[in-house]
Length: 221
Image (cartoon, rainbow, N blue to C red; front, side, top):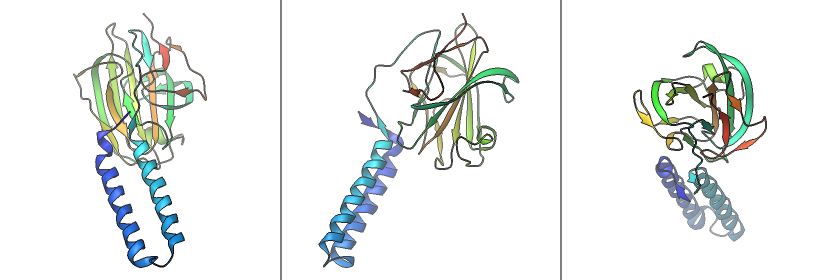
């Protein structure tokens, strides 16, 4: 396991603030109360561990397959439905949405290998990730990847009520490889995947996914 570079400043700042708070408590605030000092140290350690674990990247054997669509994120499948995708395709698509809690790994991975044909960032609100309007009103990015046979897959990173920053590493015209990082969402949110209607869905509502590992769909030939 390693730690993601996006967490360096946050982890360092959190560690320094907690250290300063504990030193202040030890020498001034609770200098005569050992119980309070110990409790504060325990709470500080738990908080620091929670922040660090958020930026973890576990070692995994990634799944690869030309016709397979791999989960772009760790989390729970909360939506599988046919819907109108009005931003890019402007027609009906099969949507699969994965919700990431603050306890999930938050690296976002390319679900397919191909060329980025479209990218756009939208500033917006921070509604809870399961709110019906979060996919159109929250801060978000849209990425469209075209695979070798011309099929296109759309990904949408959506910030939630806690997540306040979306990171992306792709741009239009860039070739991307299945399983490589395409972005990061800090402190929880959602990733939507829009697929052709004849794609075969391989997951169910409530299923837990592992980014880069779980096969969520098979694309048509």
